Length: 384
Ligand SMILES: [Zn+2]
Image (cartoon, rainbow, N blue to C red; front, side, top):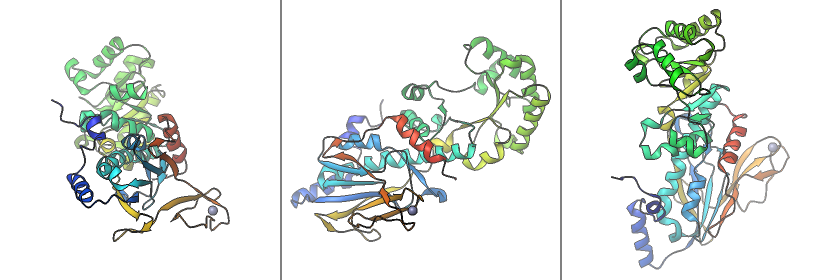
């Protein structure tokens, strides 16, 4: 049984809201199909975010390939701010009307996940961050979630298909099930060491039965330098003060001659709790908060019809462009026909948006690594 939409159904506009089909019916009957300019922006970012990362563009482009459509957009992986137009689409309205629903769907969820990943990566301050959230969402979305988490800056993903598509080694340890079935953390650690190919890191859970510190020390004594890390996934009901637990494990491992054994933490983490864990943790597995990241609520609005400025209440009409100053980094959104491109600092500002598509021809397709590198470059200048 396949419930989820397939690619063909999406490209044929079948996942759209019915009101766009009605729009087509009405406008065809009225013989109206004007040339319009529409723009996509997020009026407000979730959870008081100061910025967000724009992703999903490569998938969106597929919708309009070979249609008589022009698209200008921020390069995928760019930082953007509230109210900035991230994408401008131009063409005969009926050539894109029914694709509004999937257009927004592609970028709203992707940008939400990439933004959350970027926020976690910043807060982790160079520690490893892995995407562990596949299990919280429909499995047909697994590679989608992990792609946008990876673009947003996470270092690896746990799901096998996602890793395959991203050309990465999937990352993970063992579930509690193995320890429950074998009956002891140390025995399970030895079994892991025996069964799993050399070269795959030995990272063992320490929170199944006993105290995290005691289990960590028992594992370290037993596996010695073959143990790469321990993983703490303590349920919140048993956590107490997680940074203190980690500190205790770290200090005891150090004091007993195991300073190289890493501490990996997972279980209900988000960007807001990482700072307190950083002094003791070497890496994080982030699940639900990544895969269930708040979507960026982009909307698409008509801003010009047949060259005339027009917009609904609450929107400013007219094609705009986003400018950035090369010297001071200042950004502003200006009316497209405005000729003043000078920054307050006296320098020239340059347009951030790029022509992505001209009459259905893709001008600027980018590989995943190029998009991810753009995010990683931007992260150095941002804070959460
Ligand atoms: Zn400037």
